[in-house]
Image (cartoon, rainbow, N blue to C red):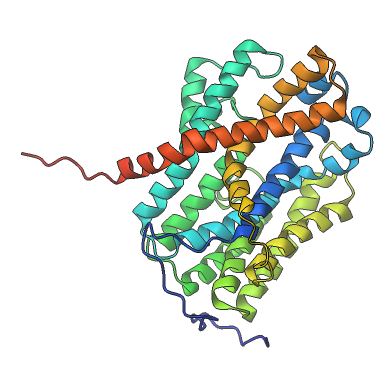
Length: 375
């Protein structure tokens, strides 16, 4: 399809699109569910076989000696986080369309907190059983972790991966206050992406430690912006302006990823970093363009449902399982790795089935309850 002249006015959709009312189920993009689990498995591989630190103690040596070939690929698994952020931009734009600010807030709280709270309890319990894997925190530190505000409060994290949730929360706040509050439209999303890109560039030029960098997050903004623009492509078709935003965010994302990881302790090839980031954008772009409609396998829904609880529990509890299986019981490395991943996926299913499914809707409903009448 030929590209149209750039415009801020909402272009006609490929097919008529009626904004879904709050709570109305939206068409599920199953391929996106598969991509979410793929990103989580990338991060998992990095934590188990691509880095040193505590996991080295669990393996009794550095993973690069345990898995000399696998570890060379696993060091790039940390880029699964950037992959997540691109997907998150797409999903948040899709799920917020036609919703009020209250609906947006309730859906995010109900999605994030139930599994997160249980994961905190599980990892804290593991820290009491095997402190060599997880350092226990004080009660006040645990309570702050329950709020998901431990990072800005300078409190030790119970879950190592929760730093990404603080990034997500800031993205939600920016998007909610500037786009969801007045009502999500093509024009507002384009304006948001454009202003955020400019602010990210200016805050980078201003230097480290500024208040603007805390709010604008220049090192992560390109990925969210790319995902937002890709949803516009998905909803409104091939137009030059959203594709231009995607291209610019990809270029800036290449720069931030390469600069952040090239010299970050573990040797990484900058061209491999750029390739992985490019593949992440390309994968979500394929979903946006409708090239993945053939991927309609029912198990992808389960894959998407397991992603968040798996991401929460896989790191510290996975190190715990590795230490028990490999160092305690003498299980060889490859079976230990496979059993650990499967165990964490099984635990993620339990969290989804018995925590997220029953308590997510209850929390959403409780947050929507009207205030009691005053006499």
